[in-house]
Length: 297
Image (cartoon, rainbow, N blue to C red; front, side, top):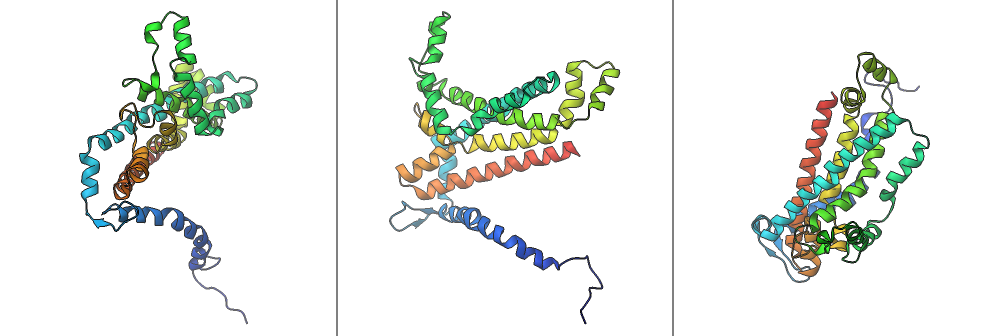
């Protein structure tokens, strides 16, 4: 005679559910949690990767916040956030709103074109833009052709314009992703909302702020989370275009992790930079998610 359950929810016991999760959690723990905990452990040691390590406690953290170059790298990452996240969001909102409202033919083609940078390797993009920014590159040729010779320069070697020049590459790269995300959100907005707004006398601009923008808050939060993380952890773009120069005007935390660990042999300090960067990414991502959830509710 079989036993029957007399209480609790139907289905298998809850502890069986943990067994289903276990394989995925084991992979996550092996490739994400363990390296993170190992980095935290190494951040308390002075170690060159070869000889015996020396315990320094919070000394590496004091170096991160006390060293001018390392502090500047985090400031540069915050500047890049404006180029990687804020500007692509503004460009994406305009592009998505125009494409959604105009109902252009071949919308899938336009979506593919604007998303194209996302499928190209960053190394290829960096090499192409480095050529574009070079003293004899296309950008300076265009400026000379329209009589702006005084504006020509080696953009990636200029102390003032090197960081914004790298940021522009990020804006170009991320705008397609943001546009596609926002187009997906706008496609789910009921047509009745726009018809009601037009009956009330709303024009295109008022429709955008009263109907479109509030309806895509969730997509905006997702886009900001993805682009902010991309800005903070960017490495290959910096390595291939400027290698942190001129001077240290374009260095960022991810590049400093590589430099400290593999060029200077300061593995403990590199781990500390990585831990601080991870904490900043977590805090910013958590704040964006919380704000997005509150606005959506």
